Length: 109
Image (cartoon, rainbow, N blue to C red; front, side, top):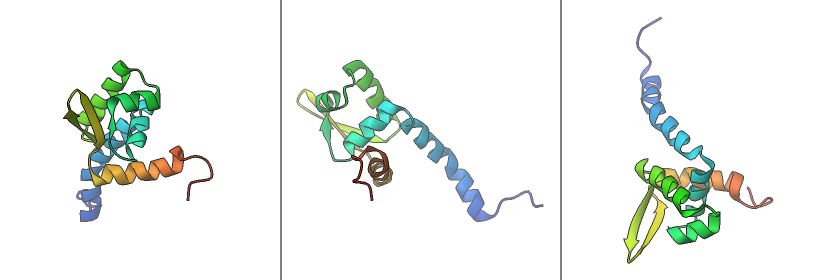
């Protein structure tokens, strides 16, 4: 058996770490709820707090984790900070997860 992987397998192995880190970040229930809330578009921190029932200190921690992982981005407008999903891959993944798990029963395809 050769010591080298076929090119396709080597490419997959190189990317598995990124995929695993992505999934680990979203494995936290609060972070997943935040991402699901952002699937519909940008939201203010206060709006997320009210919508999700996560108190401000905990929400800030989860937003920081998602931001650090590059899954969300924020912008400041006056005293408010607004967040949205960061890139098309995140949006595609969360849209699928949202449809499968977050949408009201009977609305999934």
